[in-house]
Amino acid sequence: MNVLIVGAGAREHALAWRINQSPALTRLWIAPGNFGTSGIATNLEVDPADVDAVAAAARTVKADLVVVGPEAPLAGGLADRLALLGVPVFGPSQAAAQIESSKAFALELMRTVGVPCPEFHVFHDQAAALSHLKANNGPKVVKADGLTAGKGVMICADATEAAAAVRSCMSGQVFGDAGSTVVLEELLTGPEISVFAFTDGEHIAPLVAACDYKRLGDGDLGPNTGGMGSFAQPDFWSPELAQEIELTIMRPVVAAMAKRGTPYRGVLYGGLMLTKGGPKVLEFNCRLGDPETQVVIPLLSSDPVELMLACSQGNLDRLDVRWTSRKYVGVVMASGGYPDRYGTGFEISGLDQESSDDTMVFHAGTNSGAGGGLGANGGAVTSGGRILTVVGGGESMAEARDKAYRRLANISFKEAQWRTDIGAENDRSRTWSPGRTAARG
Image 1 (cartoon, rainbow, N blue to C red):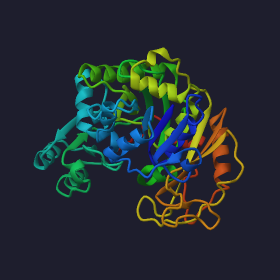
Image 2 (image 1 turned 90 degrees about the horizontal axis):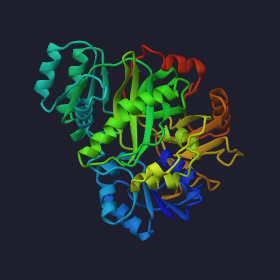
Image 3 (image 1 turned 180 degrees about the horizontal axis):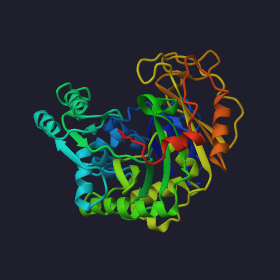
């Protein structure tokens, strides 16, 4: 089969790495890809957000399957366009992708079908939102309704902070049109977990879980980022917890989407908090996570092409989807200054160091030479904020973590920064213990 992956980050590199191992694969393309993907696939100079351009590329390469990484093309209707062309696509329709592109849509859906989630109120008018806050003091989570690349969530200690957050969204337009509607939520406490359900719109594969780190610095200090690392699967993930989440969250949502005439096909990502009252949904995403994909995809022992094609064609029930019991830890190497201003064009060394099946380096913000970006020795240079995800695997979390950081120690570029506590036993205990407060974007 000819497979086209859409996207440019470490998530897409990880998908390409795993799909490249499929016996069903004939040829692999990625639009646009990065320096790392160019070694295992053919990069195409196509803007992933340009639905027309991606559809044209799929026709040109005669794709038998298109795998969509980021959310923006899905929210823009890429799956619908490809369906009209008769091209199978791993990713939901535009209508189904509203589960991420509109937080209000997702919350109203959960309320309708009884899926546990925070108490919430949706406001299209700033004055109404501020009036609500005057009458309801206390901690709040303020969320911009639309897509904000993970930046549209503000945790507020009281109504005064929440009011400032509402103003920044609605009249300040810090998130553009995405903040014209805001959601005010109660602040939940408990361990946080990312859960992934591969689905064909009716059937659901066995769930898989990971935990990620949003804050820039060790100990969860500093600003929020796109993700500084992750690990899979967490020690507290159990068959009993997986069954509870499947029965109370994933299956009701998938059934409700199908009943609405907008079946959800692809992977449904639930950002959950394990409260004292049970699992509750903080958010849904319409795609695989980043950096979670980099530690989840190595767990997949089934054929990835068969799995994704079955999701797109509605016959997932015919497959026996299996996940390994190994552990994986992924550490993000980022540019100095990220997530704010940072320099680019710095040569990356150590990528050619010997590695094994237990370590992988997935590229994100790397340049393959366009515009004179090659390093002096023909290697990669930095071209973004998050540069690499270095992944280690093992039979235990400690072994996986050790391998990841040993591999990372051989890689360098000017002004590189990373967290040193990804997957650490004491950090996991602190981060995921009951009573911890968190919110997701």
